[in-house]
Length: 445
Image: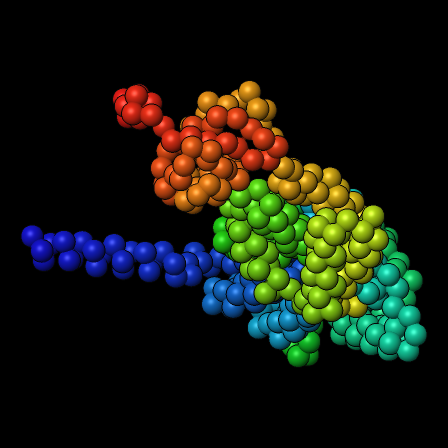
């Protein structure tokens, strides 16, 4: 029996390995691998597409087709993708699809690095003018330096693949953007295909000149298409590494942890805060975080808390608001052709943060500082405990609150049960419980 279980386990492992191996194409059939570039370009996108290039090479694919819909992203990740495309042993086709998709900013550079650019009707590409991490233009000598570098690079990529370098330069200098039909007319894209099937037909027999100078003919008619989607884990990481998502997770973590500290025992804000803090940390480790932005946001939170406790009539809150906005704008530097934090997200976060600290936290702390009040009628006759020896004065605990107590009938030992006789200002006159009261108390307990 043990031997049979061993062989069954070994067979299961072998079967799993065989399923994970690249599947050979049917005899005489070409292979086309299909990957996807959607959403923000980031380190997960770069890692995923690099693995797709390797997989296409292992499959012996005639081409790797990357279905693209991106507004841009992190420039360092864009550089990594461009490098993998230019040095790929397999021809790369960027297909901007479906209708409504785009290849803007960093997406334009990635598209121009491909051996062929195809577009579905109703798509567009362009808008690659260098910007700062906050979405504003780069000025001065630095802006000119970055602009010239981007222009030289986009022209080189376009010329390398026989496309229109002059329009590519306009996309960088003037944020020019064109639709599919005009892109083909201007020589920015190579062809239009309404769907993936039509794309395969249009590619069949087309000859491509690779960056190495080698001429390659594509054979895609009747090709076996291997889909290479992101794994579920990659999808999750890709969503988290969106700068706006990471920023919002960080704010929720801050709100949750502060709410837990100001209202101990609430539990839910603390749990949510810790989970969001971990997710934000995962996201920020894969993003180009600016330490100046982090320090400004930490300083802003410190000012908000200080204003809540010190009551400076909003002076510290105003300073915290300025620090928060500046820190948010500087927090993530995605590079000259990348996407930073959305200004509307920053504005909304600043407004919500002020509301959170000024209204909610201030009210909670005020309630905690409020002196407990109980009427004399409620106190008289109540039972409590002497926390100190009353000879004749000391502390007594009644109704969960410590009071100054005094005994007019002799000393009372610490820990002895007492009864309130009367209230005199902030002091309680107490007497030890009688034997009958002690017996009744024992019965009730």
